[in-house]
Amino acid sequence: MGNGLVYTADMAKKGISEQIEAYGRWRSDLQSAIERYRDWLAQSDAADASLNVKLSQIIERLHDTLLKVAFVAEFSRGKSELINAIFFAQYGQRVVPSSAGRTTMCPTELLYDASMPVGIRLLPIDTRLMPVPLAELRNQDEHWRFIPVDMTDVKSLRQAFDSVRETLLVPTEQAREMGLYDDEQPVGRSVTPGQVEIPAWRHAIVNIPHPLLELGLVIIDTPGLNAIGAEPELTLNVIPNAHAVLFVLAADAGDPNATVGRAGLGDLARSAAVALQAKGVTSVSVALD
Image (cartoon, rainbow, N blue to C red; front, side, top):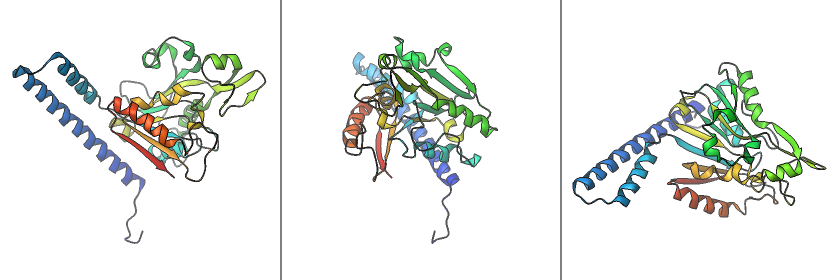
């Protein structure tokens, strides 16, 4: 740079950390203000049951200190590379799989909960056949596979993350029952007569210590938009639970037959915005590289 300044990854992380801390302070201040307002209404006999319920819902949401950011993109647009650069640059090599083709096979959350062991939890794909929503399954440990991770051993990290890429070859009818196969749109799968390749896992939760994650940041890495038609739950159902969504598409590339390409980005963003606003989400960003 002409002025002799070098903007490093550490400087970027420091900036993100400061913004997350500022966001946390803002939420805390807003929560206190709403609580004072609720108390004033009660003292003035001006509150009603409906208003109290709404204020309590707002306070409960503000009490959640997590900041969830979802990354959404077509295949091979750099989501995984961005995660590697932010969280694993110190290892000097890729930890999250990043190569040509599809590397994120299921929604993967990166977070840190000190009360839980460090490692990766994987929910088998056949739980899609259970009449139980994903939100409930999150707390049912018996359905998850756990892989411990040694943060000092990059090989251990890479092996754990590689498991997220695992697939299964199942009969076409079984894949259809799980909502993972459409005769007209077998997106991104190697199909053999009577069989189809599907993700081995429905959801992954990566619990690792990192300064940004310890501040309450949660990254949700989603499968490519190319898979949206065959996997609506695996991609779109996580968006309303995010506080912000980052769409990443290449300006000069993209599959014209993809369910969501550049031409459809506006419609997707508008649909996502409606769902996000209903959940109190504050920001939807669109990035073209």
